[in-house]
Amino acid sequence: VVASDGVALAEEVQRNRLGRVTPVAPAPLAAALDDLLADDVGRADIARRGPAVVAGEYSWDAAARGLIAGYEAAITAAR
Image 1 (cartoon, one colour):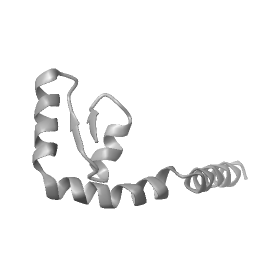
Image 2 (cartoon, one colour):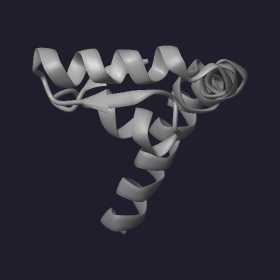
Image 3 (cartoon, one colour):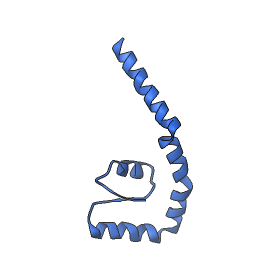
Image 4 (cartoon, one colour):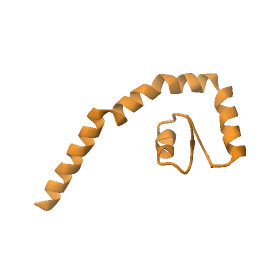
């Protein structure tokens, strides 16, 4: 993944080391692409870990857990 630093997903990409985050400009974007394309080991690591990160943080189950936690926090705060 090569993401712009102007999108919300950039923080997730950095935190989970799932690619490169770059400013929105041609030269940094090209450098990030070159860097990622030259890093066979890094790309393999991203490909290995990526699906587990997505399943753990962006699945319907993960969304439901977050929603339940939010409701529980709101109920606790209201008491």
